[in-house]
Amino acid sequence: MTDELIARLSADLKPVRPRAMQRLLLGAVLLSAIIAITAMITWLGPRADIATAPMTMMFWTKFGYTLALSILGGAATLALARPDGVTRWPWRTGLALLALLLVGAVIQLASASAEEMPVLILGGTALVCPWRIVVLSLPVLLATMLALRRFAPANPTLAGFAAGIMAGGTGAWAYSFACGENGMMFLALWYTLGILIVGALGAVLGRLLLRW
Image (cartoon, rainbow, N blue to C red; front, side, top):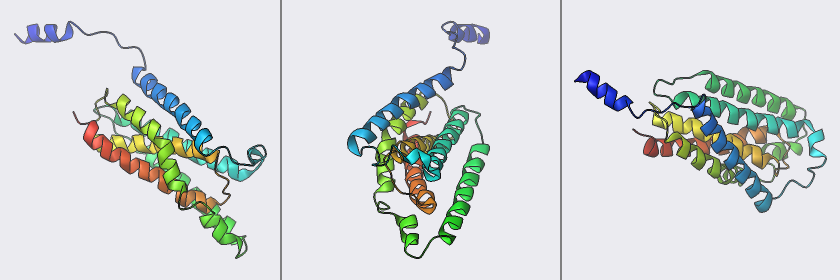
């Protein structure tokens, strides 16, 4: 009886392409990232000095920090999408990157004048920066959630949080092309806050949508 049941359950199985899970998730992220970049261009537009900004260290700091968090969130998402998936190194690496950024921010503030400090910390967009990141991250978060529904995470809340960090990092990366702020502390505070908000939203959606 048991052998017959196993045979019936396995009769309709089809071979799965190698790295099918990675392909599905990467495709969802790339497509939604294009939507996020298009939204950034039509909604906010590139920063006024986009032609010369790549010559500055701060441009590449924002570029690298946000992209790194997106990649780390993606690595955690892939691991947690499996029933037996556990991972720690992406979280530790992300915290280490934030710590390094904060060290750089303190050094930058220590060499700044009293008039420059508020600009380096708050800039002119501190109140809107996190929410713009959230909006630009939504296409990536929704596409990732749809992809994850085809997987079987053992911890839907944590998997959703990881997906949110990936989406938030991608949205923040897209936003960095529109943002003209040059403070490392601004990046550490307000960009990170926006990414964490998306992570929290992902955790809520994961708990609701990814249970099995």
